[in-house]
Image 1 (cartoon, helix red, strand yellow):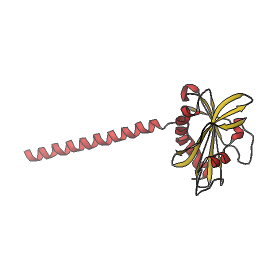
Image 2 (cartoon, one colour; image 1 turned 120 degrees about the horizontal axis):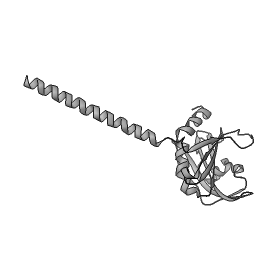
Image 3 (cartoon, rainbow, N blue to C red; image 1 turned 45 degrees about the vertical axis):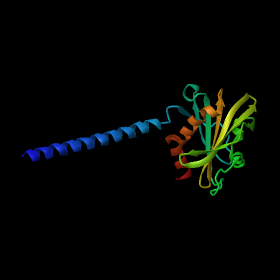
Length: 188
């Protein structure tokens, strides 16, 4: 009897430990899911540009209090416009695909671009200064691809430096809001 009681106690203890481990793992997943939420910082706005050969995209705004600077992000797909072999391999390809017209002025690169990863898609990002009718401001172009389809993001940075807000933008582009739109738009 004593051996049976010990066996039952040990089985119960093992079960309790397994339950604790399972619950802890579940809490870790809940905590991780909380860090990838992106909708609270960014507000979708109306696409402000005229229709052209690439159609409309999505427009978002993030307040300075949430993102470190006021940001206006414009993203759209350019289907079949990118090399599926090399992707966005260099700054020349980035500039060929960029939507500089959204910047309302002449864009001048501040430095060379660099490679980025957006939700498993490779791309490139480069900061610019823009002298236009509203004065001088900074912006960056970010282009990434899925096969031969390019996704082109233009970010206008009001009262801030592009390097300081790049992580916020990359996180948003990698998050649920944009990736859901990418899957729907590209039929992934």
